[in-house]
Image (spheres, rainbow, N blue to C red):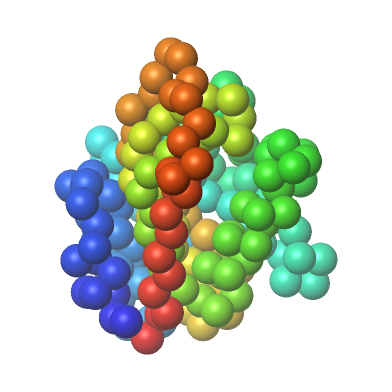
Length: 172
């Protein structure tokens, strides 16, 4: 599916703006690199943006950016932290597989439903994740954004609720 197909599934205006910033940053290349992403272009959406750099040789993610709203939801910044140190041990392998799929295929991801439940918070929201590549071709990072509403009390577990429902869209 093309970028336009991915974009058409995004409900949040803020997330669509972040996705459009990604597209404009990568003009003329398969995908933009970290250095192509202009924080000023993200504007009012910077607080919901987060990013990880990826080392293909070691298969490790290291936090690059944690917007204010993301830091607030997690209760800590991901900036400069290793993936395996940031996420709870029981959730990190699942999150790693998701992030690695986006950077390695490469692909876009979009999810809706429960967010931040793996850190003891309960939120309902929408999330997008997009690959980055400094050379324009080989993924070496991801950038994402999450919009959410947090709730003070955990919602009762619902066996019919799959949590965050994810869709992947191959990069053309």
